[in-house]
Picture (cartoon, rainbow, N blue to C red):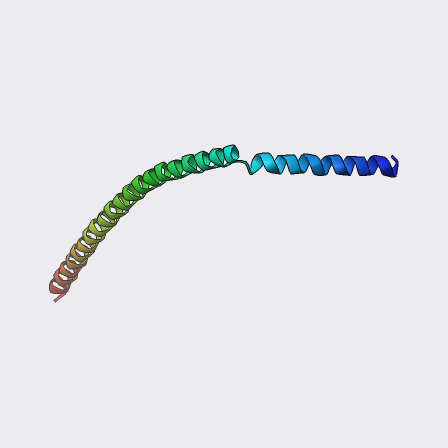
Amino acid sequence: MSIGGKVAWFIGGALFGFAGLRVLSGRDAKKVYTHATAATLRCKDEVMKHVELVQEGCSDIFEDAKQINEKRRKEEEAEYIDDFAKSDETEFAEESNEK
């Protein structure tokens, strides 16, 4: 390709780019950008509503799980105390029988 052809391609590309910038920065294009941005913000608001609902559900589940674990811990502790008391009674009975 000759230098003249390269220059012609360069000038053509520059003109095409300039025309593209004019179209993209025009008043109608700005309206499109504004409407697209508004739609994006509405979408973000809807997504955040769903995120909040999920977070509330998760916090409820978390609190319920903590209560279940606390109840289970108390039951296991009571069972341990009962087992310990029974083993003391058994040892006391064995000691009494040996004497």
